[in-house]
Length: 386
Image (cartoon, rainbow, N blue to C red; front, side):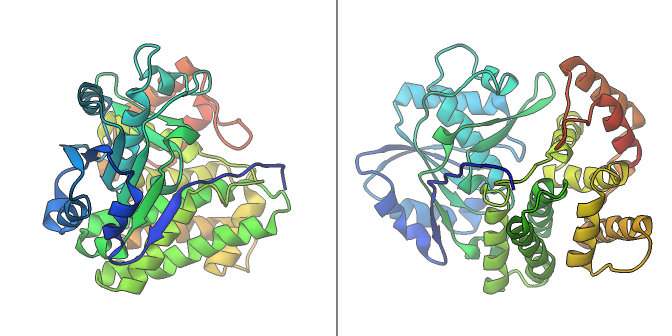
């Protein structure tokens, strides 16, 4: 296991009826900007619960945040925050709303030019100030409620980029599994797949003698495999919803990635498919991951075999036969969620591969746990998924 430092200051408030605790967690006298997405919080009663809890506070609202939050939209919120001198942000929604709110938090305090620059140059530009954030999670998927990472798209340039900072980690996050009850099948399926691939990015690399981290990761994967279908079959199964919600949080709160190599190339490639074609984030991951496993099978051999045995019970056959079956099981799991796993399923032409490869060549992109995935390797991964 590698050396590591781990710090997670986010307070988690978990369970039914916990939205009422906003009144305790939001600092008194705060001027709040409430952020949300397409308006589902009005239909499922979450908005009413939030407003009741914040009775007596000054609350402004900013809605319409997209499923892949746009820089252009976020900057409108930044203008509002500055003009109204907002000093607390409350994100109510799924990962997209939370990510957008993190960007708004940092961008409103950024004084060195266009805030897009701290995404383009995320490893050179450090965020030095941010407005405090709280969250009410309505869609388990991204783990954004317990980390300092956000991903933002820019419509004008067809780019999707990430940034990270401890300063945009929420002060608290309220997780009420009953919020899952009203979600449509597509969002639940996407959330399951998203959380699953988050784990795989930190697990499916190469061994570094970290049995505890491996088993923590495998525990989350097994829970998603077992509980995810239960949520899809019966949306009001509270226990299944709770297990799903907590699994999605643990998948990306930093814990399982400590002391081990991490990949994240599946995300890097998937972001490009979203940027060019607007495909749901989780669905891009379900397309790319099997190709990553196929093309990188030699480099990831030991962990793919371990994954196949411990998650899918694959113990017989040659090395390549076992790897093939592990990939097949992964594809079958995604497709059991009714998530297609081929580029053709999303009408993505071969020309898009050329555009992604050219962009990676221009950026000098190198990804993966060993930084070996360049533009040429990216082409092979995507061509495997045509």
